[in-house]
Length: 230
Image (cartoon, rainbow, N blue to C red; front, side, top):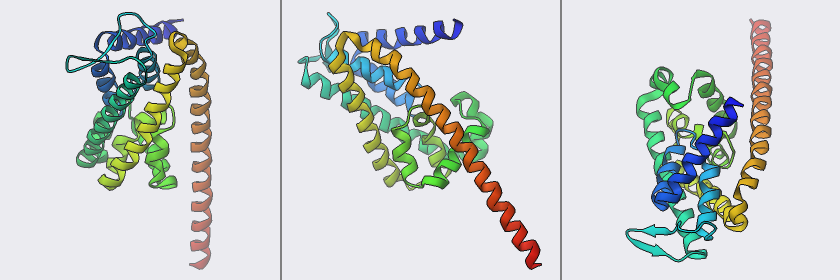
């Protein structure tokens, strides 16, 4: 009950911010989400609903100019999310690169990135290499824990940025499109999507355990071969 109340409060705060500040709120929230979970699914689905004109008095405005509701507003919202997320991801990469693993281990708790999550991210990168960035941007839960580890792993900046831009564009345009389609019923999709997040989180946990066991078997086999050779 307490957790549900907190989540409801966060959702209300996000939707109120988007209702009041439109594109600017979407840009900022997605910028933050690149390094710290900020409910990007809620942000983009609600942004799409606003673009469709589902809520009276909530216009899409850029530099004082009102953007027509419908497709133009949808494009503007999706681009705001994509650009904000990509810039935030670039900042997260820089933190990881220049701060390194020691910095993350000391201060990662402020970014919800502890040693265990960093280890998990490193295994993810070792397993998928460049695909780790692109797939990570499309995976619920994981997507906010890719930027800093990518920097720690010294992923090439240009390649990282292009993969992030592609993944975030797909995410933002897709979820804004869903919000645009469902309009006032966006909350129904939001609640249903939570179960997808639970399934993804469980799958990630199983995958990490599997990779850990596989690594241990390989390591044991290698040590046994070295011992026999010696």
